[in-house]
Image 1 (tube, one colour):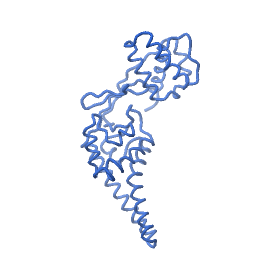
Image 2: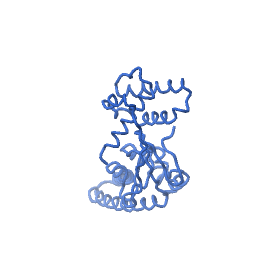
Image 3: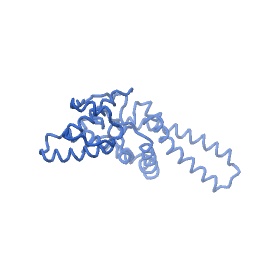
Length: 258
């Protein structure tokens, strides 16, 4: 089951709240320019850090000094992108200058674990240790339909042109008799991946044979209700329960301030 469809140069993501997002992906030339901006800032940071290390540890033996230089280099090469992308939800200075942002593969905001995976993979595979100074990143991004380098594939992220992104809501309407029930639920307890499975089930409901549709819907309903710690409402059909949960999840998502 997929959470996104690709059309031309842009990607339409469908989030766990069943909201369609038309997110233009960032291509290689723009990402390279953003990377060069960040690289210059990284080199300046590293240069200043090495001067500080030299001033503090100038009397240390060569082995300790070499170790401090290596630690400082790794801290800048990995720590710089991880810190910026974590604190700004996917934007480093270079990406900010070019209007880019790192987001999850489902269009949601990137978090620390995504930034850490991208940072480690960038230092080891995409750019430096095994990356032939960025050749691996360029090749993988060029070959990917969504412009993803190896770090994006491992982290489950994609880089988009955030300034050009816009919402295209695909709204759900809850069954009237389930509105009050859904309004009291702990919707946030439902993981994004499970919500995506529910969305895909509802979208493809008419393609299932009736017995299969009921069995699959019942399994999903039990999983969703277990996450929210509520009893499965009986004798409500699974389709109505799942539609009510997803519609309420979407309603709350769209009501949050941007």
